[in-house]
Length: 266
Image (cartoon, rainbow, N blue to C red):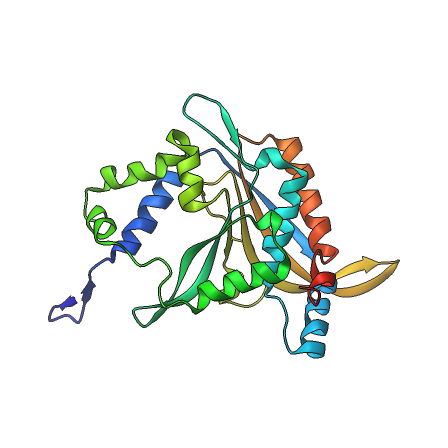
């Protein structure tokens, strides 16, 4: 419902989901987030995806492809798949559980909702793709329970205590929300550009736009498709040099089209 006055102003009630977003952003903004703005050449990867689709009528989603690359990069640098608890200890997890924002229908509107892809480092690209597509096809994969709806009506300072779960109970947090996150702003627009967002995760990828830019390839100037990717780290867990090595590995995997050659083999 909304209220209107004689001036034509419309006052809308804030939904419980929006309160949750506000709480999350305020809590995440208190963390030691460091952002890396990365350009990744995705020309070969996107061409491979188009080739697969032309040949089979079916192709992996770009989000699933990035999730697979992220999971493999973390396998090579496992200490970034961790949380620091309130006692200063690191909890390092074997499974890479990726929290992905997927666009789906909720109450007749298209909105982005979180979905956790479990054990992404142990799964094929086809499995990751099917998991994400299934979440997108759900009418509401995060339907609020009666107790959750009541919790959103609590005062803000009380509600925001839940976002301290990574420090208090890291294992419980991963069971609820995963170990790392991927969010995309590029899916809603066109052109290049980065986005910076605070996060409650030790590692988060924020997928920006793709723009055509000139690059030197084998000594020749070419127009290439460049993805703008923001990699955010919790500096309380990950230092600069390990973060840089992780980003280099992730870039190599994306530019090499990791996992795409096995798509037809499922």
